[in-house]
Length: 44
Length: 186
Image (tube, rainbow over all chains, first blue to last red):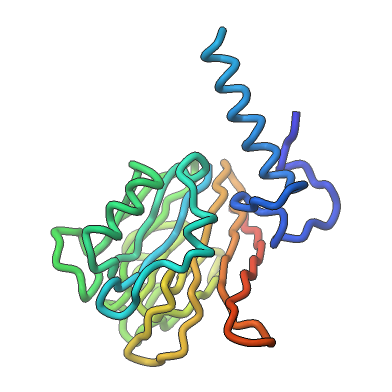
């Protein structure tokens, strides 16, 4: 699981902010996983 | 919890629309609340922000005709957040005048607008945020306004503040997105 709050060293806020849409952004991956989790819960 | 702080759109009076680069960033699945400093100036703008989050709080700007309160206090987690357009605070944007309003509302964070200039200040351990104008609408003080808004990531005792601005690039007329990250805790 991805935790965007974990300090992963120096991040560039332009590419790693909650609204970032760049591939590789921790926040983007975090929200994608949240969506996936929601879908799985609905399926269950 | 991600909360958008935004205001002074002044569409259609002083600006055409929210910049496309900002619209692409603002998606409803991520934003859980909107704190608006007023002067949206149109129902369409209000509906746009309501489409981002149904938890929408708006105060009355000097160009707003709707039935909005002059000030509002919103509690999110352990944070007491005050909202006011800012035209009532004289001199406009003055730190001591804002501190008086902060004491009246008894808030941890005071969010105001009106100056169309983003600012983040900590004064006597209280946080003061002005998200600027999301459209870059001109103000009574200047026509050279940088479009900006603020996103707050609110946790129990910590705040992370993201400032989004569109600045003219050195090359030409293309506007470039700049993002700053700041932290504040109780």
